[in-house]
Image (tube, rainbow, N blue to C red; front, side, top):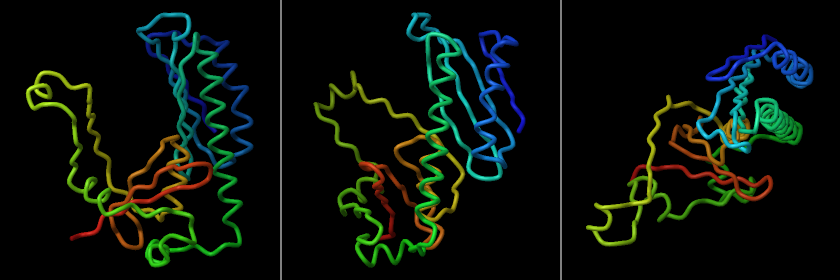
Length: 210
């Protein structure tokens, strides 16, 4: 497994490279097919003692990409926190894979026909699906107030559409550390999103043509 360390606005010393290298053996043991362990270190504009450096870790292999990031008073502290998150996501992935062994997979159509009772998923209400489809977000206040000021900030991102089963999409969501994951369901080819609920429970929302 190749180790790549990049610094942006902060120096990468030999001592830090050795420190990162000493941590990669555990990753290689958990993911023997991993190809790259990438670490990006950057200096934050806020130079307060609590927030000095940011570390982003990316593990690249033949399977899903695993990412985590953190900030800390220095690059060592930030790295340790991000590294712990990477280990936790790898372990969660392996726990899910172990739990699925010996169980048959359920398609999205079969789960929907049974009202998601077999996969412990809660179907979204018609109102929620319509709100997602139309992009309508109610904002309180007068029209003039909305024009002058709004605390709502909407950032837009665009990603290539990828086809996954629901369980594969949950794995992807866990590995990148997000609370939701947008994808195209492999069986029905419907735009769908999985999201985290409590514990090991997840939800899924799919869009259907009217």
